[in-house]
Image (cartoon, rainbow, N blue to C red):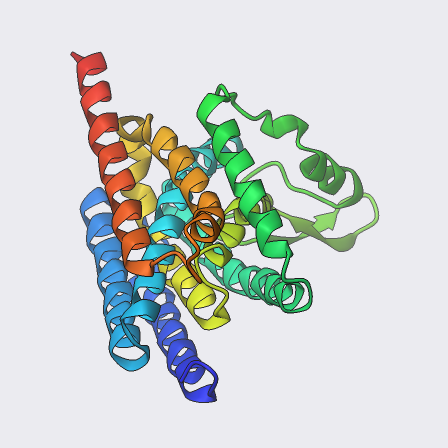
Length: 315
């Protein structure tokens, strides 16, 4: 059924309805999001994503369902690593909490478009050059090993090349102008009004660029699980939809997941190795149900280990 228009129509309608309900009703007014609301909203998105995965399992079979759930879990886990960087961006621009959800929401809209382009390009490359899957696999193994040993360094947002380019070639206000991304300012010398970018828009641009960098890891990881573009895209988007809502809870708790990156590193190595393991064992494909079980086991152990280590440090 994934080759017909109906599943895509169902997915698109669900996503549009969620976005309209989210910004048009739940968060119509600019306000600060509390931890409890953040958790409830994120949990609702997770439940919807899981229900969608259950529907795929019923409609397209257990194998497709397992591929969806594996992709969903990997995308969700990898995306958590971005929370700290998003927090740094908001802190640098001094974005008030009541405007942060607005930026994150429109960031999601941008992600939906950008991921569609990247996944479409990835699928086209795989269809034309089957060997590219091996390249993705090696890249994931390399990224996982690098992630495991690399020391975390705080990025210098002020020196970001894109930010410096925008500030050099566009009019940018220094102060926050309410929830607006653009404002019209009257030049007192020429008495001519000009459009200016606001810090909210700059924060949005940097967050979108952050997702592009993040997608370089996550998109190959999903393609290493399945080449079905419907499974790849839907698992990606449903995993990301609730992440922005979860930000407001994880921003305060992210220190407790300090060691989760080691589990993510091991997971990337495993996902990248699957294609080679399958060939060595003379299998057409690594069993999706086993891959799903291993994925959840690695993530669970990573979360438990991280919480154990940070609780000892706190004491």
